[in-house]
Amino acid sequence: MQERLKQILEESKKRLQEAASVQEAEEVRIKVLGKKGQLTEILRSMGQLDPEQRKELGLAANQVRADIEKMLDATFEQLKSKAREAKFKEEKIDVTEPGKIYKLGTKHPVTITIEEISRVFKSMGFTLTEGPEVETVFNNFDALNAGPNHPARDWTDTFYVNEDVLLRTQTSPVQVRTLLNQKPPIRVFAPGRCFRCDTPDATHSPMFHQVEGLVVDEGITMADLKGVLDSFAKQMFGSDVKTKFRPHHFPFTEPSAEMDVSCFKCGGKGCRVCKGSGWIEILGCGMVHPNVLKVGGIDTEKYTGFAFGMGVERIAMLKYGIDDIRLLYENDMRFIEQFR
View 1 (tube, rainbow, N blue to C red):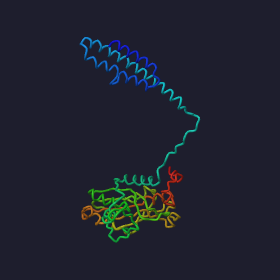
View 2: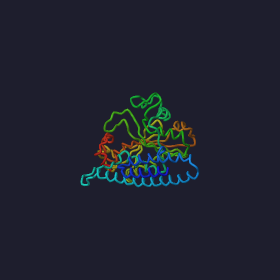
View 3: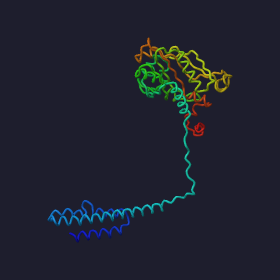
View 4: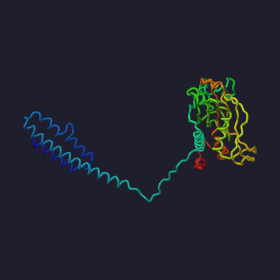
């Protein structure tokens, strides 16, 4: 047995010296130290020996194992080092060759506008909330006091998935979901995508963005609505901007209004942007209709609220002088890079 151990050690040493690759060295390890290796077989056969012989052979076998493992470690390190050097020689880099130019992207003007709007309302204590783009007919129309004969419910104006499901036509369904899931006081705003059956042109798109706002609490009045939106306009367009509210009609608010801001291009004198009027309409608003509050189980004798909604693309086009909404969706980097 002792002679066999010496023979295994010498053979292993010779084969490792001749090994030209890590794979060859690994084969030596398996042949000698593997589960069915030469040294393993000797150790298993020791059970047939008497105690004194087992002790002597065990010491010798462990010494041989330690020597072989030491040689293996040195061989593996040497072969790996050679492999790295060979790889480095093959993968030479020509440092004089021009490198690739990677252009950094920039935020889209719609994203920039949503972030600016969000910053303003967050500064006034509003909380950002969101809702699904695929909505129920109930949340999109019924709960918002839009009766079965409302023209917006027609299939020529709305993308229906089936009789009860559609792509939301406005962000107002988030208002319904908020009323159903929260109790007053409520102060939220909700940016998001909307969809309508519009033919694309310079001012219309079948997909667009809105920002919905909702406040519900005790003692909320139209004066609160005007104060919040006047502050928003000044932070968004400049401290010199003036606001004007005109009566309007929305099924989910009563009274309802549209808000104009004095033209921030001409200062109200009249120009191409404001079509000579000195005013620009930017959003719709009003006091939340009691029927809408009742959907959320809110006591209309105790609580009142106001809501507003604005088109993000319209504000972006006005603020940045964009004259065609289609430019926002053509993904032309020459256009988008102007907003870097």
